[in-house]
Image (cartoon, rainbow, N blue to C red; front, side, top):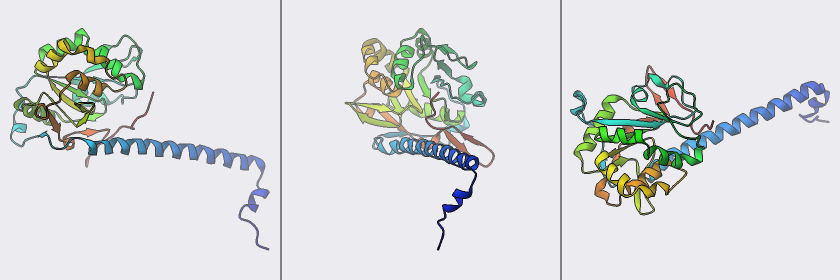
Length: 260
């Protein structure tokens, strides 16, 4: 009579069997968590396929990259609690005004909000930041405002090129554009706004900062309220990296959607 493959377990000491079961459960939890993170990551990447494609494209040029930009631009980012402690080696993280929650003790923080915001309250965090005196100073001092995520990776030459091309265009707003609720909006990893139009909208359309509490990129887009296709541009997403960069000598990888 052929014995069952599980019959060997009957001869195994209970302590060993218990360890195997606990180890198997832990392994399953780790695998499921990893799969969920990867699914969320690729779902996010696939959102790029939904962007409005028939818009003027802002990209880098071979000639302008040989000279420094003459455009004045200011960078800001919302610094999350999961940002790498080594992010400060990236030039744009050093240059950006880094906006943090009240209890964030990271030494890289430049501005503290009045409270802590959950991940699902980033739109409210944007409302407080965009109405702050520090943000007004950045707007007044620059031709363009650049918003970067704290896990966006972009070189200075590339960003200089993008800003110069944006300045020369008729667009007021540039990013990975979508269209919803009657206006164009950009996803958050990188977008550009011309400050003359932004100042006008902060004066005349500030009430729209209560539009959306969850996503800071939608909140900004609701404030700008652009409906004319000639006023918005796409940015070539191949000019920057979000969460992942690799070449022959360097590897930078951020875990997607890891909550504090």
